[in-house]
Image 1 (cartoon, rainbow, N blue to C red):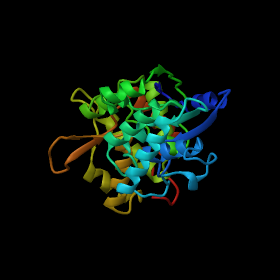
Image 2: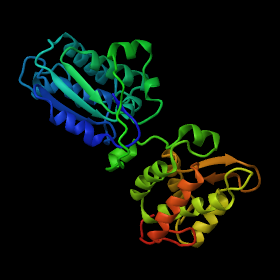
Image 3: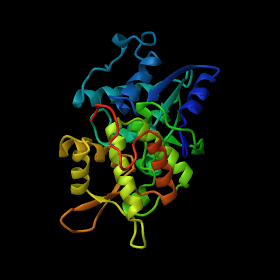
Length: 311
């Protein structure tokens, strides 16, 4: 299990490509529709279980299109039972990008607990050699003691500080500093590293979203005196964004803010008053300054409106 700050995609891909024997199956935990159940069924099909050659779906006592109901759970259980009874050779190297996202997405419509348990059971199967990456600081908590013992995870610090790449990878990014965001304090990551990670996320957003973030970041710096971080009330943000044609409606603005909060770029503090919660960037001041400098270089400073027609 590779963990640490930065993208580990290239590292895991290189490992998978270097496997000298056996088959290799790569699973992207951040891809649309990815689930623990799909990974289990794909592994079983890759090994050709059920009496037919590898990849022959008709030979299997379970199907990939069984849906998310009781039939799907029976299909997953049948696949795990077949894998558990299979010999250690031939083996399959299963490379899972973002296994924490896969484990927390539910086992194909099931609960997080069942998804995590299915992945632990898959890792324990004799023909499976599982190598994976995790991005969330609390990833070990996805498995209880029994699940962790069954999977026998070996945690390896693989900090790369490399920028995160594709949309699937960005979609599973954890908050930059979960503890700091929850407490409303500055991020614990180094300013340069935190700014680089935030910039990677911002680069994937539409221009209007980046311009809205610049407004919040500017307000964070302006009020960052001894009373804690500054920020901007949502109502004030909406009024400014609408005046600058950055958000046509409150719903559009909330969509932008929701994406910021999902990635830990923005946090909220209830400070009372008619404006409700106050939005701010929960990173060290130096990191916020770095982000704003980058945005201003693209024409998205706190005083600008940003370009493009995408909301």
